[in-house]
Image (cartoon, rainbow, N blue to C red; front, side):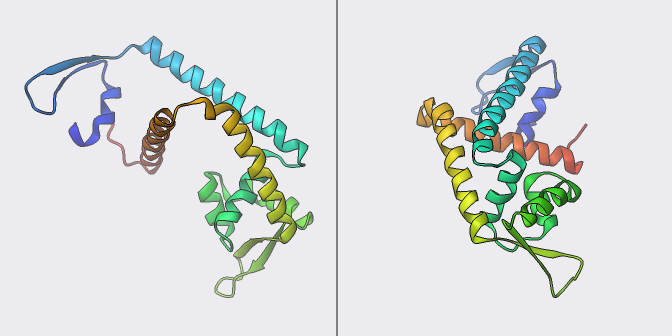
Length: 178
């Protein structure tokens, strides 16, 4: 279990030895506390998304549009498939958003010479300006809310989110042990 410590969550209880092997601790899951934490986490996510979404709407953006524009500021010229993978959505979900952003002259699609079925996506100057405005709104809201955490707490939260993200990727890829 050492290399896959997260497997402990599969068990109702386990005895875990210390790194030096001189002592052991008993791990016992509290199912009700776990459920409370998951509910609190889901509610917090909804509140954060609602708060930032409300602020982005003032700038004329929805959260999905902001996600696309901000992703394109990071990697110019990615394909629709790459964008969908980066945002953890399907290529079909991105298509309608890209249609609207293209109609608003915020994004351009250029057919790839190597594969005419795929397009390279780029921000226009107008799209880049709106993305920057959206990122400033997002940053301000995150600082107003999550900025209350101490630096060590923010690092711990970030580390935990990376662990969870990697676990989700493993589960989705079917790499987990049942």
